Length: 160
Image (tube, rainbow, N blue to C red; front, side):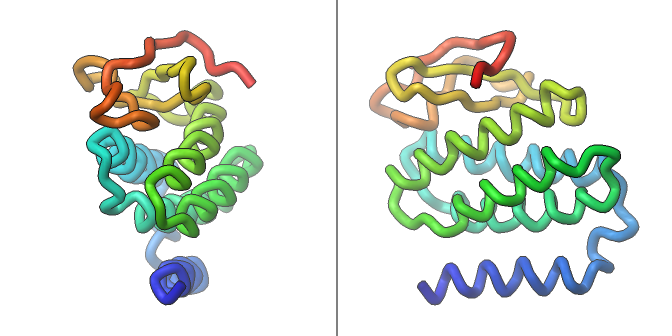
């Protein structure tokens, strides 16, 4: 509980300060969001929780910052909301489930052309999508980790 409160306090202080992201443009925020997401994906694919919760909080802050620069703030508001939910989870199975929602919110930005450099994959066993950087080699399933790392396939469009 103490850890969750500290993440949310940090996020709120950064949003209120405003100075940290006011000068950044959307491209910079996009790159940072994709980088944080990629770290989360890699951790879950490796059966680790390191940085997943913390990065969820960071994405929530960055997406909230992007709202003020975006022509359409709705996808960023949604991304911020679901990333905040990831920041509230502690166990790997709950983090993986929350990661599904985060991936769907991220997909809305990718498919609208807001975020580039990512491809989407789908695991029918987990009924979940995830994004990987275009230059990542091979399937790396974050929902089953090492036990079924290669389960899933690249998709052209995220459904749902």
